[in-house]
Amino acid sequence: MKGFLDRHPSTAVVISIVALVAALAGTGYAALKLPKNSVGTKQLKKNSVTKAKIRKNAVTTGKVKKHTLTRSDINLKKLGTVPSAEIANTVPPREGVHPVGGPGEPPFSQGSSNFGAVPPGVNLPPVGFFKDHDEVVHLEGVAKVTGKDGRIFTLPPGFRPPAGTAEFYEPGENTIIVLGTNVILGGEDLSGAVISADEAAVLSGLTFRAAS
Image (cartoon, rainbow, N blue to C red; front, side, top):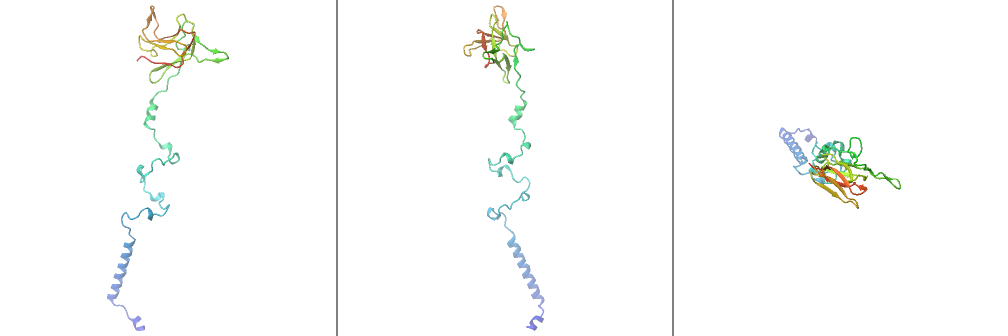
C-alpha cells in the first residue's frame, strides 16, 4: 500500500484525468442550458414573475383580457378626450331665453301680457322664445291676450317661419298662429306675429324651424 501511495501518476494519467473532468463539466453545463421555448406555465412558480421581470411596454392590448380592466386600474387623468366629446366641446352653449317685454326684447302687442298668477297663487311661466343648435325656434310661457286681432308679440327676423307661411297649432283648446316674413293682411305687415284667438294662450311646447 505504501509503495502504491509513493508512486506518482504518470503524465498520461494526469492528462486523462483533466480531460475527464473537463468533459464532465461540459456535460453538466449542457444539462442546465434549457432549450428554446421549453419553459411553459407548469414550470413557472406561482407569483414568480414580478414587475421587475417584465420588459417595458411588453404587455400590449392583445395580452389583456377583454372587459377585465376596471376604473381602479386606469388613471383617468391620463386619458385623452374621445372624438365625440371633442366635437361636443366645439358646440357653443344654447342661447338663453328671450323674455318678451324684457329690456332689448320684442314688446307685447296691443296690451297683451304674461298671464301671471292664477288662484291659488300659482305663477304661470312668462312668455319667451329661443333657438336651439338645429335652428328650431321654441316658444314658451302663457300669455293673456287682449289685442283686437289676437296678437301677442312679434318675433324678430331670424326667429320666424319661412317667408309667406304660417304655422298653426292647437294645443288643447288653444289655437296659435305664427306668421312668417312678408305676410301682409289688410294692408298691414304681420310678419313674425304670434296670434291667438283665445284670451289665455299656452305657448309652451310649440316649435318650428326658422327660415334660413
